[in-house]
Image (tube, rainbow, N blue to C red; front, top):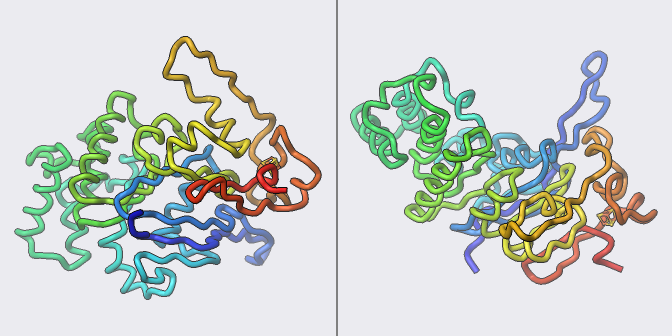
Length: 322
Ligand code: SF4
């Protein structure tokens, strides 16, 4: 098995809610006690419905947000113990591709300036070498030298996401958090960007945390998958095992919505009642207990502990543990 490149232990990300006079009256529990490991060179798919905390977890893992509790190690370095200056240096290795390539690019800056600015901030090279590096990465992501001088509004959505990818890769990182990088794009463009991500991974040995709500995209790109619900990781397994033998009731719900490859096979979609509870006021027991078809009294009172189906497949559900 490959080396662990990033390890998160019991990470919590709570956002304070302030009342009168700025007093903290509650917390939004966006990420609640998540532990996971990313292996060098893999794509770890993080999946769940909107609002489940997957984007917040992605940002927290590379310290774009400061975790409320828990530990995050990148290689052997404790990221939460780094000073701001040391974290800035570490950014060379930890990058992010954002969902909306339009709002994540400064509309007043030309594509080339967006790229050279990153090298400038890191103190890399001089004016000429930065421009050469920017042109080289533009070419790598399938853009042309003349695109260096264009503004974000002059590009299509797919081209803007190529610039987003170039911006993440120009520092030659090791780990890239891809936060729904294709969900704002047309289906025909999605596959181009996904294949570009895979090409770059093969060429550079990149590790991806790929965040998506689309199980079909996850199946195509991921090696392992983590399923999130209401700030919790509820199941994790290698991609084929998760799709072929899901254990957690929520994973089964997500998979029931994925169309079958065989048009003759009709799948019974499981429809959930109600909405996901607010992370301001999550259930005391299992996070899924308000919607789970198999809920028991125990589920409402007791958070499920981890159960290992095998060494690579873990699940948080009382049904899997006596
Ligand atoms: Fe459903 Fe209970 Fe399992 Fe939670 S612990 S997923 S409520 S059966």
